[in-house]
Amino acid sequence: MATASLKRPDASRARPAVPAWLPWTVLLWAVRLAVTVLGILTLLFALLHLSGDPAAVLVGPGGSAEDLARVRAQLGLDDPFLDQYLAFLGDVARLDFGNARGSGEAALPSVLAKLPLTLQLVVSTLALSLALGLPLGVLAAARRDGLLGRVVSGAAALGQAVPNFVLGLVLLLVFALWLGWLPSYGSTTPAHTVLPVVTLTLFTLARVVLLTRAGVLDALSQDFCRAVTAKGGSHARVLWRHALPNAFPPVLAFLITDTGYLLSGTVLVEQLYAYDGIGRGLVVAIGEQDYPTVQATVFTVAVIVVAVSALGDLLGRVADPRVGRESAG
Image (cartoon, rainbow, N blue to C red; front, side, top):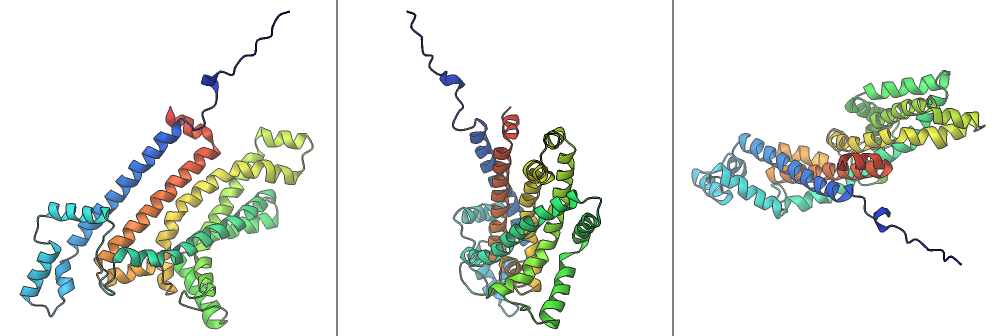
């Protein structure tokens, strides 16, 4: 009787638990983070030193020559430029940007204390844009030849053309001053976030609608959607189960890129609504020539933008493993 031999699975053919591209990708992200933050801080260091004498700002117009010399010696401003730059990088490595000029408190903790309010605006904007933009984009694609589809597409195109400060002024005038439904300034209650979030959402929402519409229309023209329809699949099933997933990756990539835009957009919106986030704090710090707070704010924003970009890269590779394999060669 022949004995059946049981073949052990070939371990060399087993799928690795960790994709081969992941270590290189993590290393690339770390290098990208370091180079980007270093470049931004170097540019910021140079610009701040070219904008004037920090010692003269600290001493004030009534200070004596002795006071000016003493402050310059304390800050190391008499040292060679390279020595000042290396000392600055050492402070950054220790996360020590000095004390804020107005409050006298450490600059970085003061900036981080305002960060949750700004992130609340950004996260709310992204979530609202995604929740409304995907169904509206699918609707615009499904009814592309009808009145409803054209209205949605036209409104989205118009939404991309309206600047934030124009929309913000209109909302402030109508809902805060005329109707009195919402507060016009401040950041102490959830109601204070409504107008800033609506102001920031319009462009992002409009872009998500148009990207989703284009992606769904492209998917509907592909063979796999036609095959589902030929097999008796309903129109709704083709749209939501097959066309929308194919349209989502470009939307995700845009939302990740838009995070940096939103962080920069909060500077104007927070100033308009006197919302006490890091954007308004940056404007106040620039006006007061508060160099430590400016440096700490720029450092914080740079780290967030690069980290979000790396996270988006990871999500894109997980969603489409072909990207990771192509990068790994």
